[in-house]
Amino acid sequence: MKKTVLGSLFLILASSIWGGMYVVVKVVVSVIPPLELVWLRYLVAIVALLMIGIISRQKWRINKRDFLLIIAIGIIGNAISIFAQETGTMLSTAQMGAIITSSTPAFMVIFARILLKERLTLKKGLSVCLATIGVFLIVGVGQVNMSYILGGISLLIAALTWALMSVLVKRVPSNYSQIVITTYSILVALIVLTPFVLPRLHAINISQLTHPAIWGGVLYLGIVSTAGGFLLWNRGLQMLEASSGGLFFFFQPVVGTLLGWLKLGEKIGVTFWIGSILILMGVLFVVIEKK
Image 1 (spheres, helix red, strand yellow):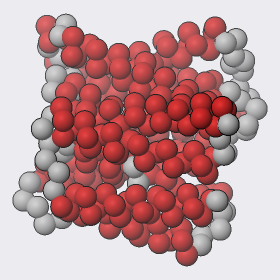
Image 2: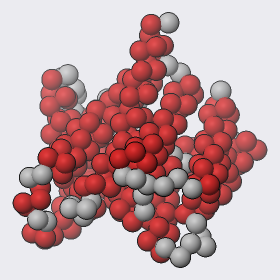
Image 3: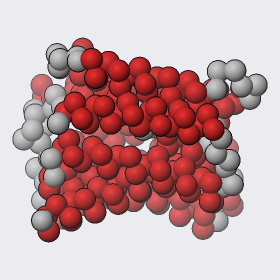
């Protein structure tokens, strides 16, 4: 019983951290553009993960046959997905970022079928349909605000690429530590992003980086959200069944929406709630199917 409660607390904390991440991104991207922010975020995260890995005496050796898979995870999940996520949040709202990217578990069904040959059931198909409809409602195809539409599309790309990365992670041999895999995949993303970021760093206003909200936000994204959130999530899953753990992912959009409303003054419309409910229903179908 104690183990279940502790595991649940770890998962709730991880999801809440990721929910708050969208509000932090919304504030920080006003000073640091998305591409540069992703790079700085990973620079901080890799230092934190290396320290954790050294202290916990991780084994860093990777077989040559697994390098291509880890490179794909780094490019798809850590580079493309996070850049799309932060761009989408900049163009739209923290609420939209938290809700649309919460459709990731439902989209994993498609990639699991293609790459892992998992059985596609009626419930799984329905979950994808519900999540897709919910995304379109939130994006608002008929809205005049082009920024929100582009932001929603960017967030949808983030959800799809993160889902693909999550399925690819399942193909990594289980004998590797998650800390090691995460560290290497983030290192790949840093290497890929560096040639694009370095020529643009001069455009960042250094004086604005000294503001506590900005440098504090970068540290939050790198240490708390990337390194800490990942470790808490995986530790919690070790204490609970994976199917039960998936339910705690719902805390991400709830926290993201509430913080966006409380801290940023973002409005919550009727179509937003309808779309959110459809997405959460779609994700819930996946969790129920796993059970």
